[in-house]
Length: 251
Image (cartoon, rainbow, N blue to C red):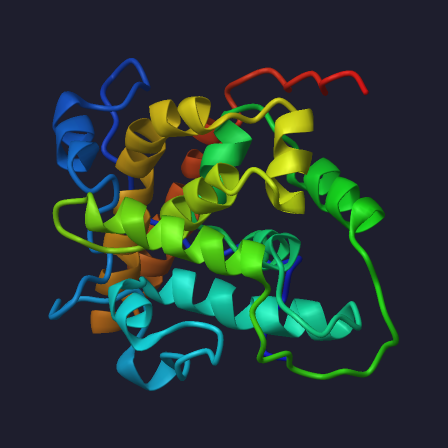
């Protein structure tokens, strides 16, 4: 299937002051697009090597695909596989959400920073999602709520400077499509669009260094670069977990 939902992605060195907090320069660096090195239309810098880029997912139109970062592209593509594994004829918001949680990205990091356990979220989604007969394979049809969520994600991305759609925009699109199962589960777990928007710049400050270190490693694999990558991964995860868990909304 080409994905490993239990694996974490790579990370990078972080710019931290003597007190262990994010430096002012790093925060300013992230204030605009919230993530440094995100793939934009015409950008020479992307999140994965050219040979590793996924083919356009059937459920994504060409205009959206051009704006997506490589991680957002993988999430959209993996959502088709999630729907097939669930035996459903169409990709819905819950499949997009589960696919987004399959690797480290800014959207998933924001959820953790908001206080949510991703294991709890996965379990809650799978408990409520509809399943059909197994063996459908890769689903190529997009349900109406998922289509609306992707349209909203593109709207979020077009408001960025530079314009791009990352996993954080996918998350906001899912939250704004309130009729979708993804938004309903997230709301019940205490996640709000406003809370996520507040956390995107600070998490993005750390995540931008993740992408920067990945790019450096691609330029030349050395033990030092790998070490810095692993150090940053640990520091990034430590930062996003510096909040208490959210309390689930009562039924």
